[in-house]
Length: 339
Image 1 (cartoon, rainbow, N blue to C red):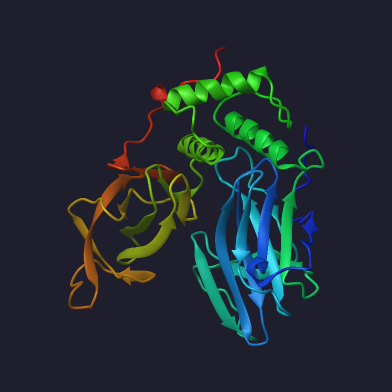
Image 2 (tube, rainbow, N blue to C red):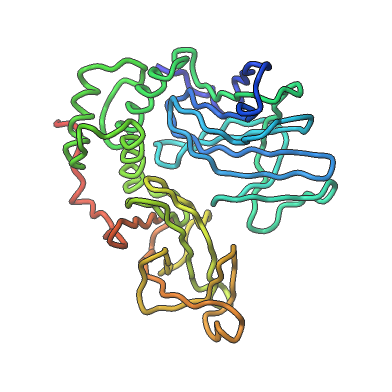
């Protein structure tokens, strides 16, 4: 078992890679040795200013490249938080340097002395990386000494996500008969091929868990193939607002509104699907007030599909290859393990 209270705002391991690197390996790498799917961000501070960027999704046991160039003498920071698909409060790995982020994928740049998060950004506590001017560095987010290998983290991660989907497993790094039974039931329910990769399994486990534990606000989950670009529209206090874009990779989710919903309807637009409600948008990141006279205001116009959010504090819209997936009704939910 993993002891509680060991994650919050604590970057437990910063592991240096070899300093004798070739230019081809000049990079900042982020590794996940926890039982959680992590969404990570990083920041670079130079003499001219700083840039924060996120989110990079990393499944248990995996590593992702954050920066693919020599790290040099700049100052670097990292932050990570758990996927909202996991049961319980969101856990985070960070430090004491507050930098601007957003719920959706973001990239913010500020000049030195002008850092001030705007209304759509949130300051989160990042941890500084002491790379000692080395061109190659690996930051490893850890949870327990028992998860010190790729296979241990993968096994613990699969067990945790199976529990998030309704199973009752002991959370450790050992594959056992109970895990095999729960995993077989999950694969059978989703008709997953035996040849599905570990990454495909993590994608499916996270997506299914999000269907029954929508976080506060409004999220869009990509159940189809390929990347989706999504935008939303809703009635604000004074006028209609449309916002975009959010990049949603296959098998993952993007959180578009973070506060508990107080809306009866949210309109959603993705790359190929919509309905007769039309709103203004552009091909860049945007927030547009009003939904009329788009052409006169030099905006494009596109169809948005309605999602009914009345009475809900959180809603996760799921988009498959054929468009919006109907909300999962409680009576359709089946336990993973027989009682």
